Amino acid sequence: MQHVAVIAGATGAAAKRLVEALLADPAWEVVGLCRHPPALKRERLTYIACDLTDAASTRLALARTPQATHLFYTARAQFSDASIGVEDVAGNRAMLQNLLDGAEAACPGLQHVHLVEGTKWYGMHLGAMRLPAHEDDPRHMPPNFYYDQQDLLSGRAEGKRWTWSASRPGFLYDFAPERPRNLVPLIGAWAGICAELGLPLDFPGKPACYDALMEATDATQLARGMKWMATASAARNEPFNVTDGGLFRWSRLWPKIARLYGLECGSPRPLNLGRWMADKGPLLETIVKHHNLVAQPMEAVVTWNFGDFLWGLEHDVVSSMTKSRLAGFHDTIDTEARILAHLQRYREARLLP
Image 1 (tube, rainbow, N blue to C red):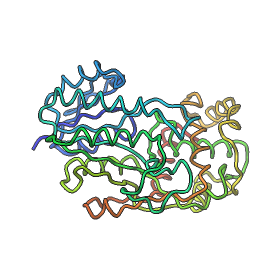
Image 2: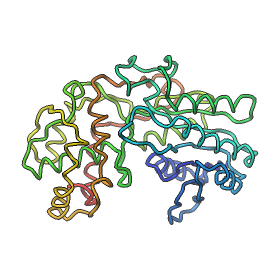
Image 3: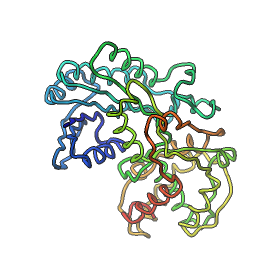
Image 4: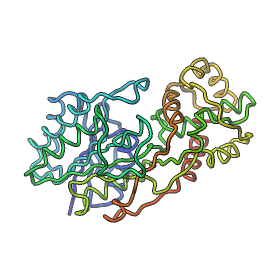
């Protein structure tokens, strides 16, 4: 059976891996919706210009995809990293509503809609969370745009022929040069600066974070989970955690990163990276010249405020994968090994020292 997937927010890290996962299966065709369609040409892949914040633009885009059977919503309203805890509830809900309105009007064969959420569903950004986090845990005090989006989606699906699902990944990471808000270039840029200055690789976060149990989700792992949910009968009308399937501690990973860069492994030494790195643009230019790297402005390489958030957590972040596994999703990734592999890819691409 041929499936036609429409991916909203098609140039994001998760969406790009989803495109790869779907096109690897000859049963899928893919249509990507994004503001600025790439020039990439590939069999069974089409891009359409679409501004999800504009209802008319979204309706016109979906009118060109009447054959769509599956929708994947991977988009996110713009937000400031300085306010990383609370994001735009109204904007995120409106974008999803525009997509659903357009799809229900133009796509009579719609079978399934998938929504990407995240661990913030469990309030991990607010403080210590119930561990391990289960999909049916009580909600925290709003606002949380994930709640509004899922309520909208599940409500719209009632009495319809189509079903829905939602994925809740941990910290998303990948080899994604166009995505500076990513723990891989964050690590690599920090290590490169330490090396240039002849410093040990200190951990620039809270001591409690250094030893906390953490989880993350490689974008390829999330893509596999999304594809599974879109077609598995056990996943209909349900949310699922999607992590790499294991846990890690920065204190175990940090010495391996230090070895990769030939540095002495330091100790936790909290810094406000957003403030301390603000004047390091000239240093980064020097690093680029020393290592013959691709020249980019610092903000295109790394988002330091994200590091303050990620490494400022002082509690464990653990989601249960039991529900996903019992329903049939068993893919697993070694987080430590994958992060190190992505760092090496950045270096080979001359994007990081």
